[in-house]
Length: 275
Image 1 (cartoon, rainbow, N blue to C red):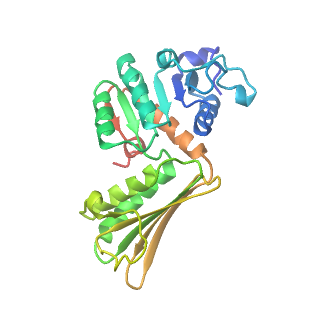
Image 2: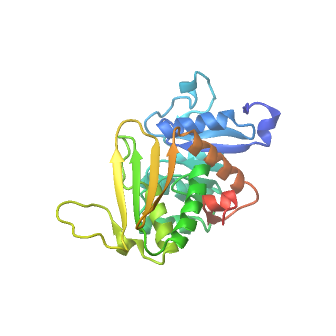
Image 3: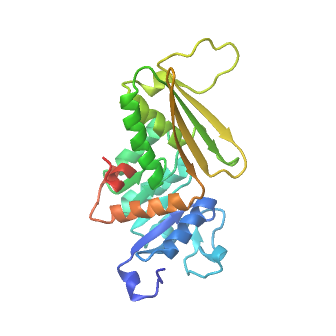
């Protein structure tokens, strides 16, 4: 645990967290506070403006949550952002001006918004991934290998399950899975994705990649990819039991960025050495 008043804090990576009063924001703040090499220096949120960032832990950090983006980023080396696309883009605009690096776990960006992020990455270093979990990114690599080997003769279905509060569907992780599988099979996901089935749908198109989204309760995140062939099927599943895995993966991304990277757009495969 890094104390902001200790000598070690001088060499620690200074981290700001966006969405500081949300479920993921609090998990990130707790992970930063428990880290030996990171220190919380900023917390962004409109909802809890003025509150101490670690008050929910019964600890006074001296870092107030603020709606003022520039003030929240003033003392930060890296921003971790798991918010909404519009908010993330507003944060990135200032990050790129102030020389603050960014770890982005936000999902649901449009193609045009992704172009904006790429432009920001020419001015600062960014790690962006739909899922920061180390285990999930290993799963994505396994899916790539499976898709290359089963490009013909196997139907692909992606099933994702999340808590009732999730606002986008399919999840960013499910879409990332679909993109990766489509590329490995030589397909265009936009042309082959099927997001809904009802009524007399006819036989399944052999080139399609199906998506199913389930929402309920407090499920953190389950993703299963089914490769169904004639006489056999393979299921590759990742289940997240806690958001802790996303927080720990985000800190690995923070450490990756502070190792001399000043500009560029990276993903978790880069962070984990899987590219």
